[in-house]
Image 1 (cartoon, rainbow, N blue to C red):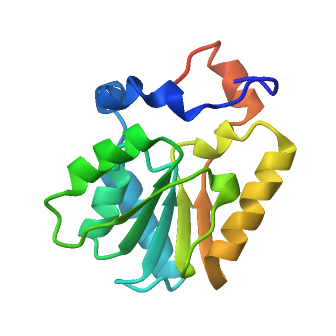
Image 2 (image 1 turned 120 degrees about the vertical axis):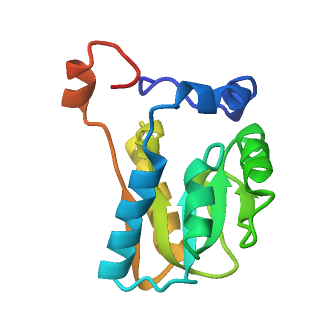
Length: 166
């Protein structure tokens, strides 16, 4: 997406049903394990609250719940959240779901940690929106809470030669 384009939740209406097929090669188990190590290092307790932004179809959400974290899974797309809810339906430790833009995030309770995985921060191509999202995240996590995110840099996009994934 370029700066003059804006992400619209409707863009995921059809994609939501096929998203897992397209991301079959993502190592969600490895990602969750890595997050578990970070949570341990930065004292996010088992059973602690984790806010997952841009959760998509809930593959990481599911694993974090299975690891014992109380997850609030947030996405701007109702269709993606619907798929996530279906995926997590059989879990004993079920997540909460929140449909909202990460720039407009408001929680009742603060989370111990926040995760925005798989380059989802890259959807915020406008510096103003990025700042707004970071402020909302800061308000949403406890003092001293952990915020984990990853990004693809401009150089990486150039290296990818127009591909959408590596």
